Length: 417
Image (cartoon, rainbow, N blue to C red; front, side):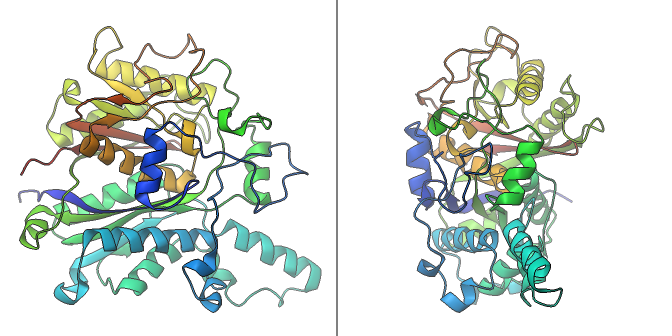
């Protein structure tokens, strides 16, 4: 059976810059950091006092108060981003077979804040005093279920959970669903909201977070010699994916085409990547083979690039192994936009997919900000330091890697018909 072509027709984003894909992209192009001192949590008792909080967010601006109380923050973000993506796509469900429209919107952690609050309530008031909505608010498939119910999507509906690779795996699996004719349209992406005591405390104890508390906007500094960890962030990214002929038939706007998907496991360590980047190398090679292109065809890579020592080194050398270094491949640009929007865990691959698509549509490669003193131990690549670069992008690639050794890669292509 011939694989069907899959295109992107809708985009939605919730990010530290606020709600909206355009707002997100304008800040990313400008090289502006979204990292601040959060207001939704008292971090005075924490060692880490910075994060990428969604700015000026009020749930009641988007939901009735009664409904908002039944939705964890991560689910709220997923619904808002999905609303934007579906509106952007101009998909009319009254004209669609609902069983041919599916949902894969996922999260790495689920309702951390809901779990935290209700556990405290149980300890203080008794085991039967937690909210009756505790379970549906905290479980990881509720974003997908919520999007499905909100828009009447009756096809594939599931959550893919693979730590920080979640958003990319969700889009990749949705891509496969359309390719193999299980759906004509898929709403896919990731959402996360773990700026709470459990989330911040847990990652701090794992010694993964930056403690550059006095300069939040400079804290995330991938590939820089003075980096000291990643910055926790929150938000959501959602795409509407469509079979190409289906999109053409209804006159949909097409942003880009998804042409390649790779996924592997390191089978190495629960936290640390394979030091030789073998799983990352293979994931990228599989995605390139799936796309039917050569490494030299890729113009831009949005790296996982978390601003951690082991991760930055392993991924950068994996990229150099597959694509060549700066001297061997002068065409390739590589950047980590986590330097600006922080690490959104299960949402991060989805928002970075948006960046890869926007790089294609706008011919702009976003920068890696805060790269002032490049670590000599990372590979010699063009990391687009501190300022965006105008460049034609015909193919872009996005990497996401998760705790447990999960690796995932997507390849996007300019859609010329």
